[in-house]
Image (cartoon, rainbow, N blue to C red; front, top):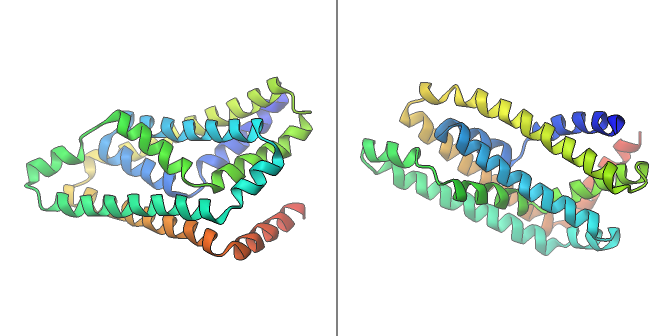
Length: 226
């Protein structure tokens, strides 16, 4: 058990620092809405991860491989993220037109259920995350003889480590909250929206050009074997 825990911790740290849409939105949420809001958002992200892990564990390798390589899923997921980013950008533009006091109230408004759903959705629409968890499961599953107790220990430790590192990031980002003007907060929200649009386009491109995606995947696999 100790070996499984020690093997999971470095991967949890690495996962927490992977640069993706969730990374930027987490920091933006912490800066604009505070610790609790960012934590709820992060729990939504982890819920999507748990769902992906369960899908990978209870489905056969061939089914997951065929599903995760479907171009339509990348296009659909990327389109959702792209749309979300565009809507967020439009909302920021509308907020600019509000009086200062109302703008401030809107910026700091917290809807925890909405934040939970936002975290879940942003992670879930990225079908590449499913491929990532499948890769991890295949890699560690054979070493653990697919023993359920060992796999639960490994993934629980990984996700707890991921959450703890994220809490550290949230606390660091929160320190900026009182130092930012409304203008700077507005810029952060705009940049985050543009990042979501960019990642949405990147995910969609993986669906439009599957051969290029496979080339990148094969190249990464060759690097891993060396």
